[in-house]
Length: 120
Image (cartoon, rainbow, N blue to C red; front, top):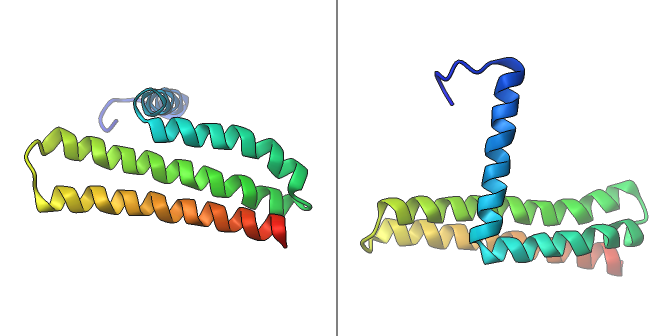
């Protein structure tokens, strides 16, 4: 928040509070985010079991975290487009489609990382 006068530790606390609000909002309003959180909860213990090195474990967990990050960004794009663009517009549709494509590519990345590390 620019100009709020929050500095140092106060700024960090406020930033963390906004982060928690964002995560709660995504979990409450986005089915895909809830599903991906479930995938993270299931895959994290699996990563520790299946990963042979700390790098492999980091890649397995990191690929799912990347998927969550992309999903959050996609949801944010959709919320902004919906807020400002009630009528159909080519750019609004393009923005939503690109966000969806980013999530799809992140899913492919997650699947590839898991398949390559678990099977080979």
